[in-house]
Image (cartoon, rainbow, N blue to C red):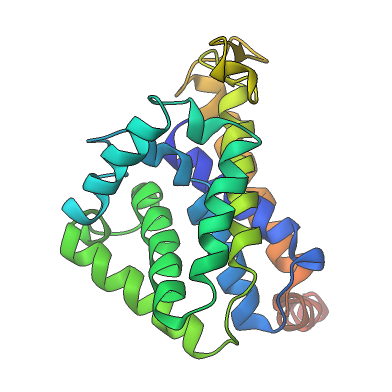
Length: 237
């Protein structure tokens, strides 16, 4: 799937999972949704020189090249539904124990989401290395400054990875058969839809937007704010 579809589906799943997410309070809920949405892009860091790996210049491109080699190419190791969530989740578990590593991980999630959703964000600031760095690190600092230490980051990473893998599974390129591909390169393919198809752009992406907005309304304090306004508006009609 396209990058923005991954990010939008991640935001939708992040918002839908809020009732079970290990977070408390509005700011922490926003951080969770943003993290799942951003980490739904994480598996594509296996592609050296891609839009995602170029996000922060050498800071993301160099690790991306290493990840790609370790994963044995694009859409292999980082797209394994067992290996990817466990491996990335383990790294996140270590990172979540310290403030600066948590800040880095949260900034990475926000940066990935901004880069993927650039088509709905005015201007091009989030597409530049410096602009993305400033926006993502500032956003991460604000969120973490108003929440407890985010020990939930491994769960957000794992969930985001699974959302990404599920999205790629419905394209004709598919994803690797978990673990089996290490011995025999084989893929899981559920549909013949190709990446960027009309169905993805015209149906799936808008559906993810609607789902994300609905679950944010249903699962956060937004509902308590919106409902009285709607009631008052209807009363005036």
